[in-house]
Length: 328
Image (cartoon, rainbow, N blue to C red; front, side, top):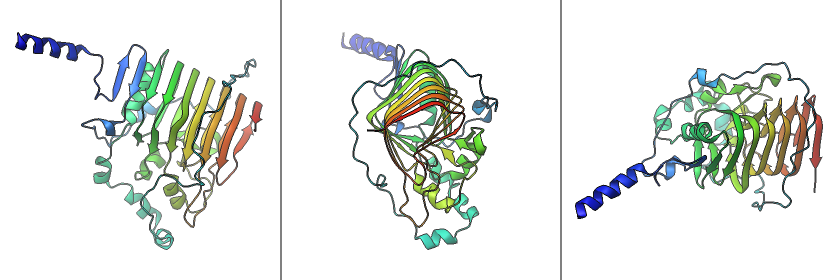
């Protein structure tokens, strides 16, 4: 009798749609994603996305001017956010003295990012994040739980539709593999710039509830850039690309790699309750860490932002129509 009960219990567990230790649990049209570092046996990856998987139409021709649509106004009220930390970002190991960094050559800085033994020992959440968008990015909900998601590869999630995204944790972009980012980021056409994350689709919301934190490890990028202007391959943190009816709300950025956000070829984009802070604690300045830039887009609504950076907070580049910035 006892043996039979055990067999039945094992059968039930094997048929359960995901386990408590799974990185992605899908129930119906909802994907719940847990950081791999929080699972008992985290997978480790140093692989990169195959070039064919990163193909995207980057036609320089702007889409035809669509008819204006009503702005997607956010619900009243503000999400609670921690007070800005004056450019400080989560505690990290102290950098080498500025003089030592200055004496290193560019090749030496890149070589430091190619230590495969270090990379192999680092958890990479990128594959499961992309998988969650594929599984629940259409007519679904994606929930990123609390904890740290380590992002070591570029992401393209531009085919979303009728999708709600909740981020309760922290996204951290790696900076020990700068050579990878410089050669692998997605071009966004404008001025030869590129991005770490292409994000878009139709009827998509991304909410952070004042808890979501995007950490780009910007100090490393600032130091290796050495007060130069634009650097080819240096990634914009998040780019809204060919999106329609997009809402981004309640997210905090700390130490972005380059521009915090970029909006291109998009319509009816609402970005509210965002807190951005990228400054330098070394001899080098936080050059070109704009809060946002918009290009070939219309019906952009920005409200309740806190931006501390080494450049402009927001800048309409070319052909912005109906850009509304509301200050409180």
